[in-house]
Amino acid sequence: MDSLIQKNYEIAKEMYASIGVDTDMAIQKLKNIPVSLHCWQGDDVGGYDQEGPLTGGIQTTGNYPGKAATPQELMDDIDQAASLCPGKKKLNLHACYAIFEDGEHVDRDKLEPKHFKKWVEFAKSRNMGIDFNPTFFSHPKVKDGLTLSSPDEETRKFWIEHGKACIRISQYFAEETGIPCVMNIWTGDGFKDIPADRMGPRMRYKESIEEILSEPFDKNKVKPCVESKVFGIGVESFTSGSAEFALTFAATHDGCLPLMDNGHYHPTEVVSDKIPALLCFYPEIALHITRGVRWDSDHAVLFDDETKEMAKEIVRCDALERVYMALDFFDASINRIAAWAVGFRSWQKALLSALCTPNAALKKLQDESKFTELMIKQEEMKTMPFGAVWNQYCKECGVASDHDLYGKISAYETDVLAKR
Ligand code: RNT
Ligand code: ZN
Image 1: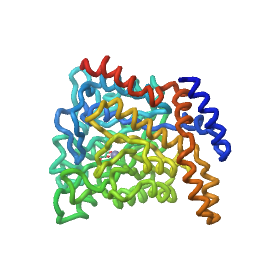
Image 2: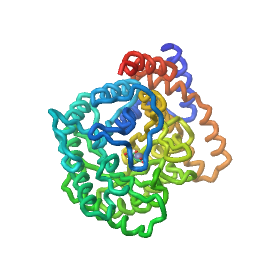
Image 3: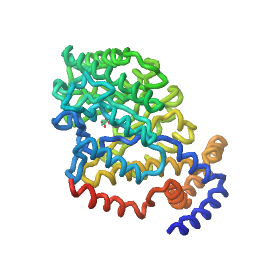
Image 4: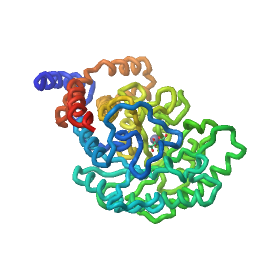
C-alpha cells in the first residue's frame, strides 16, 4: 500500500506541477495550520459540572453506545480521535467540562483556572493550544430560556460573572500554553413565539457582553468572539444574538471577533461568501465548521461542496492566519470517534484541496474577464488526482488512510468503548 501511495503521489505531483501547483509545499503548509478540535463531540455536549439535560436550543440525537462518561474517558477518546487526524490541533473546551477534585464543587460564576488544570496538563503535553467557551446553557439558572439578555437582574448578573470567570480562565490557558485562547460567547437566548419586545433583550445582551469584556485581559492572549444564530429548537421566533447583532457588536468593540457557525443561517445562505466580506473589515474572524442538514443539526463535517468553498475562500484570501477555525458538531447516532475523525479529516481535505488550487491563475482569468476559460479550468480542478495528495499527506503525518480508518475505529470500539 505504501509504495502504491508513493507512486501515485509522484504522478499526481507532476500533474499538479503542470498547472502551477506545488503539492509538496501545500502539504508542508497544512501541517502547521491549527484547527480546533471540540471536546463536546465525545459526550454529546453533556459536560461534567451538572446532571441536567442539554438545553439552549441545541440537540444531540442518537444513543450510540460508548460515550465518554468521565473526564478521563473523554481525554482517552480525544487522544484516539487525534491519532486518526493529520495536521495540527488545538483543544476546544466548554466551561461545563470543569474538573472538580476532592469533592469540591462550585457554580459557574465561581469557576477558577484550577478547575481546568488537568486540561492544561493534557493540552501542554500534546503541544496543543486551548480555545474556550463559557457555557450559557444546560443549567438551572437559565431563566425562561434567557441568560445574558434576561430581564431578571439576578439571572443576568450570574451569567455575567460566569463570562468574566471564563475570561480569567482563557487568559490562564493562553499563558500556560503560550498560544492565544479564542473565547467564544454564544447563548441560546430567544423566544419560542412572537416577542413583544426585540430591542430590550438585545440591549441587555449588549450591556452584558460589555460587562464581561470589562474584565481585564491581554488582547494578544485572549480573543473574545460573539457567535450569532438564526434560531434554535424551542426558540424559533427570536434570537437575541442574531447575525446583525453579533457582527455589529464585534465591529464596534475593539478586540472582539465575529464568529460564524455555518449551521446558523437561513438554508440558502452560505458562509463561504460571508468570509471574504468580513475579511474586508475585520483583522481577524472566527469560524465554527459544521454540517447542518435542513436545520442546525450539527452533523459531522464531510468533504462536500460548501466545505470546500469555505476552505477555498480562507486560502485564496491569504487569510489562514486571520481566521480561527474550530469544528462544532455532535452526532450521537454514530461512533463518536468516527464523527470526530471524519469531521476533522474532511476539513483538512478541504484545506489541502484549496492549497492545491492555482488560485492566482484563476483570479487572473476572472480579472481579465476570461470567463469561458475560467469555467473550464475550474471544472478541471474537480478531477485532478487529489486523493493521491491526500493519501501522501496522511502518510507523512503518520495517520491512517481513508481506507484504513474504519478498521482503527472499529478496533477501539471493541477494545475500549464496548467495555464501558
Ligand atoms: C450552538 C452553537 C454553539 C454550540 C457549542 C456547544 O448552536 O453552535 O457553538 O454548538 O457551544
Ligand atoms: Zn457553533
